[in-house]
Image (cartoon, rainbow, N blue to C red; front, side, top):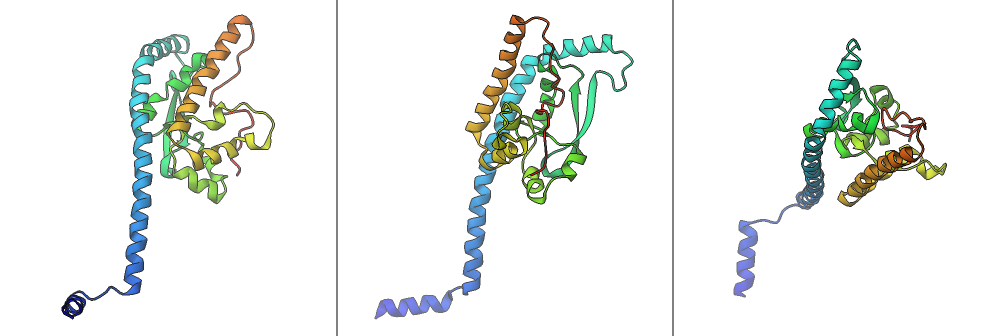
Length: 227
């Protein structure tokens, strides 16, 4: 009897929340959990970008400086100097100026983009950075998920050799990465990104005089942004 009276007294002092309020609190709690998970994933990815990107920048700085000096001597009157400047669309749909060395040798133009990784405009791994015109052609769904990810220095679509199969279409590979990206996949793509140019360099040594393929924007020939 005493317990029943105490419970009734507590209900009087602390009335039960309406069903709508309880549902709202439950929804907010679930949303907070999803947000916490997303922030944790972003933090891990950003930490990888900062640590590995900074280390790579320090290691390649001497080679980049020598390449910039050689370009300055060889192309003294080139508009824009030793850097190629292009407008690309980044995280949240914000445009930024992408700067790359005007060279294709040893992928120094790609490595010269490492300052963008450290600053947070690029990630080490992600979908290819699009021009404003390419971004304008995206379907709504593709435009939405692209705005939630930083474009990458390299990515799944860039390392997969074209096999002619439908699932190797670059836009599908970018969408697959957006759905399944994680630290493990990022490290596998980075390892593949290192292996491919090393294999090409060794192959070039065995076959002297073979023409080099252009790799200016590091996307496969026929790259499509259509979803």
